[in-house]
Image 1 (spheres, helix red, strand yellow):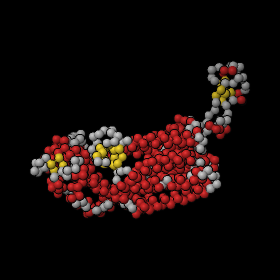
Image 2 (spheres, one colour):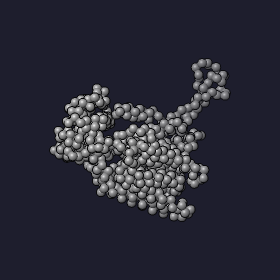
Image 3 (spheres, helix red, strand yellow):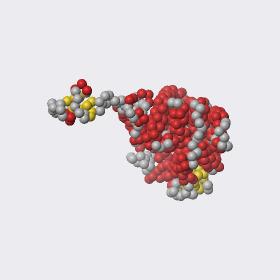
Image 4 (cartoon, one colour):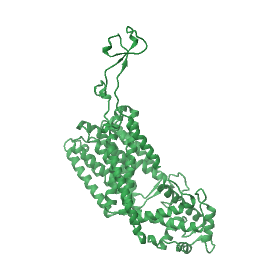
Length: 558
């Protein structure tokens, strides 16, 4: 994957070098022969100077600076990046710059997560991580309103508003609905049962469940729309006075919410604690798999679970032969596994094993549950190892790789036990790697932001499609809705206030309010989401586009 990315980036670099403005002279035939001093050149076919067709004319050098079609020229970003006035050319550049911005966002995300694993929660987890996640969006919004005169900024700032609205709407509609479909399980007693998906695409009997912390996060997200309401108050009361004051007050409220949100995450690092719990859970899985893998080989040569071998292992562990693994038998299995290195007692390990295996809820594991549970663990191990390595290890090494990986993840999240010193040495290298990724991501995002805004504006001119809709659809970058609402809105409001721009985004703000309120209410007061709820999320996306079009271009709100 890394090699493919390098090849693609090299190709883009080569295209940039070969693409640029050129100058030429037009070759045309004269209507009448003149002297050679006027610019005539023999075509080499005849010496008869009396024939018109025997001469070609090289006209005066023509460049874009003195072209009669100045309105069709484009300005190169930084003086060397390619530009074009055609729709297809700008579409290609949007794809190229969009890919580079996505790469920057990936570097920032991966680097901040590495830094979080090393330094833990607090300042890094509560402040830098959320801000870095929203940095690409914030940069695009910033450059959209900085360039040119006030009139140019007023036109280009639509790109920033489209990005702000598009990111929020996409995350709460398309991405949210996709998560429900991908993560769906059977719903029993109003809760989705993990790893049990037997009811297909049932709209009411399959879905996902969340915990109370997700509901809290949804309520925080709903609070983040307050600045949008404040800045719209003059438009709501149909008054032109006080609009600039409303922008200033909304900016102050947005910055206050941003600081409060960061402080809250610093002193209430429950997201980081959940990451720690998940890392420990994965390491328990890896430890059990490694131990049982020593008892017998339950992976086929192609890496798939060997159910017959797993059944044989079940009968080996089932000491009394009653076809069930009791609490005592599971405890005996775990006794031989060294979990002291992650500060996990045997009761906790048994509880985790039962939670994953005991789908019937009778506090014991039968043969079918054991086979399904081991198979699920093996599939999780394969996904985890493949996501962390460019090549997938063989079946015989899969469990060993998974155990080593989860141990490293756990040590990074919180060094414990006798191996803390070794983990500190590894974390030093990881720190350099994390800082390098952050600097590279920030540099790419800063360099690409301005050209990306320009090509979106050029594409809008070439196609007569409003730039808001282009940035709404093409530019959103995955991040966090709450941070997007308060940080990116703060940047946008600061631009409007400092550049004395007109706040004329009633339709766009209404779309953000509708989507945030609907999905915020969903997340605040429900913890189980049947499959039918994803249809509401998906429908909100085209509804948002249609609403902005009708309000701005049919009813004339803008």
